Length: 285
Image (tube, rainbow, N blue to C red):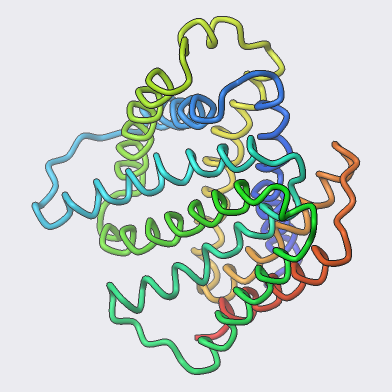
């Protein structure tokens, strides 16, 4: 990979890692978590709608499109921000999000009949072992809810990637516009039902919080993924995807500078095991 493209992929994983501390900033400023996820999807939808072209899709794509939209647009965003909201420390959930890769590999073997080598199974089990080590951190035990929620997010992220494999022949702008609309409508409805006066909350959101929502939707969701797709034009997936394992590193660094959070030795040990296992699992064919 050229120096220019290496710097570009590092910038992409920096954006992905920044989702956790910047999300925490928005939630700390009284935006409820489900509403935050819904507004993020609204930003994505508004950014994509100028490029949207309506098309009649074949029946075989309907269920995968709905499944992808619900898993990624609704469940991933909901559990991500619920976990951030439930946690006073971000290191465990930033690392725990890496489980999306092992979940994706396992679910692909179940639904897509993709073969998993013994070495890859070993790496998957090692990554889960790293999460078990994280669980021995006393701070994590005190905030078990956040860790469980991020595991749910990782599961649905992995499942969304399985659904996306069935949609590879559809225009990516069409699928993501549909996904973001479904995500916004369902998340906003859930916010009204469970979080109270969402309309009044939106009216009272500060400019700083709107900037965190805009950053999450336009910069992380759109710009980050567009740059990733750009790199796929030049390099195979197995060369680009392993860099994904680095996003917790950037997330932890940003969390330190923004919140002054220093990971414990147990968290660092478990994190290194998870990140290393995921890195080699993605690199292995």
